[in-house]
Amino acid sequence: MKKLINSPETVLADSLIGVAAAHPELRVDHVNRIIYRTDPTRAGKVALLSGGGTGHEPLHGGFVGVGMLDAACAGAVFTSPTPDQMLEATKVVDSGAGVLHIVKNYTGDVMNFEMGAELAAAETGIEVAVVVVNDDVAVEDSTFTAGRRGVGTTVLLEKIAGAAAEEGRDLAAVTAVARQVNESGRSMGVALSSCTVPAAGKPTFELAEGEMEIGVGIHGEPGRRRVPLAGAAEVARLLVEPILADLDFTGAPTIVMVNGLGGTPLIELYVMYAEVRKILEAAGITVARSLVGNYITALDMAGCSVTILKADEDLLHLWDAPVNTAGLRWGI
Amino acid sequence: MTNDTISLDQLTGWLTRFRDLVTEQVSYLTELDSAIGDADHGSNMTRGMDAVLEKIQASPVVAVDELFKGVGMTLVTSVGGASGPLYGTFFLRIGTSAGPVSTLDAPGLAAALRAGLGGVVARGKAEAGDKTMFDVLAPALDAFDADLVVFSDISSAARAAYSAAQAGRDATAPLIARKGRASYLGERSIGHIDPGAASTSLLFQALAEILDKE
Image (cartoon, rainbow over all chains, first blue to last red; front, top):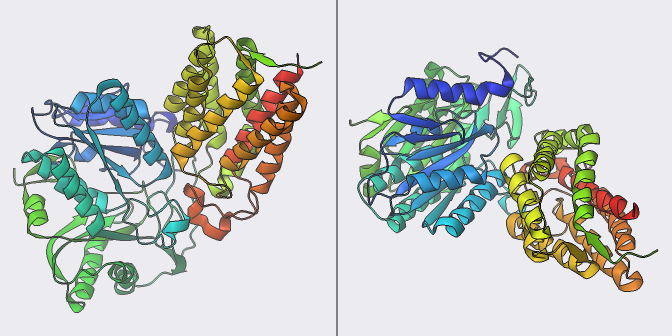
């Protein structure tokens, strides 16, 4: 294992020190491992709280700021944060308008956030709403599993729901927008190599030189199948076709993200984006907005994911609204 | 000799013995978790139970509900993953069911364990055959209750529960996982004992052993 760390045990704590040093607009609670905006939540504004295991940066801490999240709870690498963190963060960010918890659909995350919300309700009476993101079409038998995993759509959801909260919509309306995004977004990923969790010290899975894993999860969960490596055009087809088979994206403007998993250069992501666009154009799908880069990663995994969101005028308006975070910034 | 009660000291002894067992079997639990999970169940449970024992030693309690509520919250905040909320809720519900007493009689313990199982179901939504800790907890508690009806002896009931727990643990091997991270493996989860089922079986081993000591 070759990593720029002091020790596997201190990766998270050390990185939070770096976040605090680099971003004066953020406040880091090092004891509870929570990243906040420096300014308290504006009175009457719905607060957005997310979080999860770390190793997916910039998600979630990099999306704390104006127009997106109010706070993010950080767990250990690939391990859910615990309910006491969510309770603390919920109390801090609530301005009286309620708090929306944005949770990726993994068993640990769902249970820990659920307990955090229960504790908050019992202790404070703060109104908490929850949206669970489950957009990974790679999981086929969702009835017989823990369900579809939360992946790329989480990024788009945090941006769009954040804008809705920023412009003053109430908790019910912000939650409705968040649910709409989750229901209208689909993702699929591919791994060219495994990731290495610092505490494990070795790759999570083995992938031969000429192989790729289609449908991989952001923690290295197995995908739909392992196939020989192919050119970008073929890989794009293998990712986009299952997405289009899952939801009809015609007749509406879409937002398309090609996301790097951490170990793939941007130049390759643009090669992929070009191929994705060709497929979408041939399928008669209108692309209204695009995002290309590393937004929801899996440590050092090589590969990418494609997310397509079926939008409407309102979602595009919210997408275009100003955002000022470490990981996403425009219009400011 | 027959016993009909379990004291606060014995309940503390149960937790201590459980800590010792998960510590002894940390590599076994981690090995099971490497096969179908993320290889941290042994270390997570050891860390959690160490924190529990530390808390018990630092602030002694006088009532059963206080004991188990402390245990539950400590596990929730120190274990993480899915095991933290599941074991945490199990012990929190045991505490709520037991109430502010210093001793539990056999039906009281049965009811408390049953409430704990209810908490696990509410939290994890698992059903029989999903290849989870439920597949140990449910048959163990059924065996506990059935034995109690016949022999009215808490130690005998705990031994019966432990036998059923072992059988339940082993019976998870041929199952396809339908909950948690293992479920993404589908048929590839067949042939492996569920790590949560294995640690839950240790919970009943600890209970049987501590009650046999008296």
